[in-house]
Length: 258
Ligand SMILES: Nc1ncnc2c1ncn2[C@@H]1O[C@H](COP(=O)(O)OP(=O)(O)OP(=O)(O)O)[C@@H](O)[C@H]1O
Ligand SMILES: [Mg+2]
Image (cartoon, rainbow, N blue to C red; front, side, top):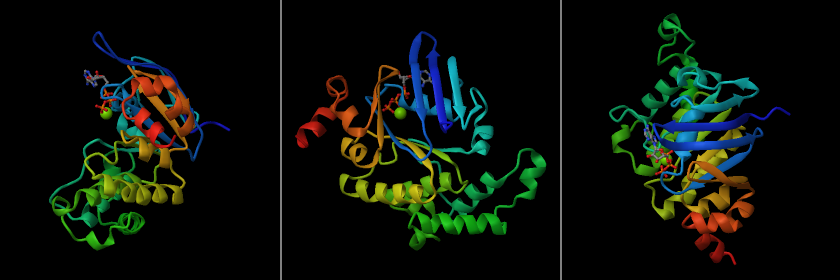
């Protein structure tokens, strides 16, 4: 079967700095892929190239068999790839419901100016998708609270819910648990992952907490110095001696389960 995502020989340089190189990854539909690596290893650069926020210097990216290399992010979203950022991208003075409606309306927008005018934020389709996403992410009790008054965990759920409101088939999450306390991380990821599973969304998530990676990822890619140094099941990657040597926190995780 055609992989949902197929990345070949991907490279990104910024002047003389090589941020990503020789990346070859093929992801089948419905897989949950964890992405680990030290600060500056190239994880966000990798995601940014898939979503069209950065143009690769070399290589190709295929989504469901279609070449999307270097396409603008607007077009890539429309094709079915959505994302969250390291810092949540929400409208702070609007309510959870209003934020969700905007995300749903934008996702339903057809290309071109006429499409924008014809898709109001409060269209029945957008509002019902917004209500469904609010329920799916279990934040109904915050429906009418403005985003700037939300607890951090709920803000994260809103941010990811907004990315899902567009019904993507591939979702890229850049550090979904950053800034969340250890006690709250597992609950947050349980809600997120069961929501994504119920919608059959393939997910790549960047994560620094190895306990979270081991629990939620079917497969783990380890990045080091811009490239993938290990790619296997969570056990295979986290038990890999090179990964344990080069990525802090991995050895600790392995030791705790020895
Ligand atoms: N727009 C840019 N211009 C110049 N250099 C950049 C740019 N974006 C990233 N880099 C550099 O590319 C390298 C990879 O950065 P990237 O943000 O992908 O790392 P990361 O693995 O996501 O790290 P973190 O865990 O800290 O988020 C770093 O050396 C970074 O400084
Ligand atoms: Mg990053």
